[in-house]
Image (cartoon, rainbow, N blue to C red; front, side, top):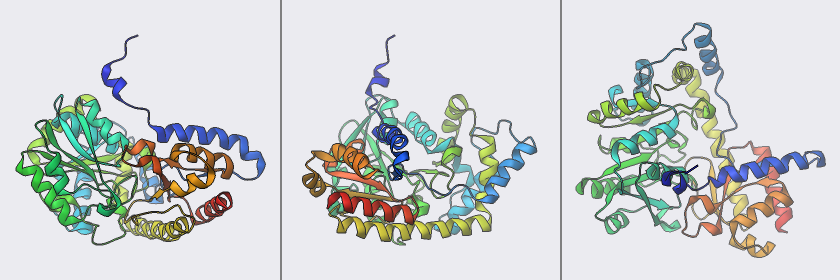
Length: 394
């Protein structure tokens, strides 16, 4: 059977390949008394709060399980709008918000609506691999631009201006970023958008970790800059609803009917049960619980990053959001006699029973020298992981 060229362009998601290997090894070592510690997948260890779970059960009990509008429940769009106003002090009308089947669907819809065959989107290297594959699936091409620690592993306005070419359609950014947990300085993001808009391009910003910002100077939505900016967000990370597959997209109002038409055909609607459950995310008790969790994520970061640095797994830029540590593993590779983060990740998994993610997925600029740790696990697990790494590297 002939496979499409589009499908062949999509590389394997090595994060998930590593996860499969880690689970297989975990089953083997379970009898040794030292279970695998999983610091490889970016998933909160918290589940949806009680009010959210109760709302889902209530929706099922009451038969609220039929299709909704393709753009989502009107009341959910209103609550998201209110959250922007109260949390980020930016006015985002509900009619500009489209609820989607996760941030993945939001990115797919945005790319299909705006990218033509051959269009190029500028992205930082390193960056989340699936984002560039959404561009490829729309027959566009992701152009990765090396971003170093001095610029927080994010693009600069000067780089955007220099890289802009005849086929450039715009930029696809993430703030805070996966894998680095770093955000774009607000003034720099404004300058980037100015460069893009001056050239008639589009600015897409993945903000799925925005709720998990720890630094007030970065905890600002790109939507405050210009209503022409397109923002992708999700209930997965801050709202602890990963498997519920619910996200949203904020677009300029004229683009809403275009996105709606695509969503009607591709998805019909987001999960109805998940939408009714998500209404409870914005109850005061739920929001208070989310803020407690955000503080816990910060405490985990504040323990884990200095501990990694002390082991020689240096994190060049302190993450200001999300729950990742992007660590230079060059010294550890030398110490253990392995070449690059891919081999090191397997060595750590086999010998220390700690699953981590090599930099291979996230680009080409020095990523072979970096490992991504997820700090979404509880502090006792993080402490145990540090002890195992210390023993291994000793």
